[in-house]
Length: 100
Image (cartoon, rainbow, N blue to C red):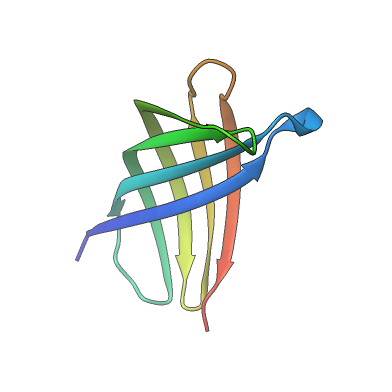
């Protein structure tokens, strides 16, 4: 099967201690050559995020585009996620994971 879906929730503190960011992503992945031992994939999707200063949550329900390029192995993955961002949150995220 060449198709896959990925969803994630991430939490990160903002620089300077001014609050925290929580983000939910929904990504469609396309696997070029499906193979359980090693697979290259790309993906596109949307994310939404919220900012929290410890007292008042502020949700910014704007769809944020996500672009992904990754390599999945039998028991792990490496991934680069490009996020054009919104306002002050553009960036590139490097992810890795281990399955068990």
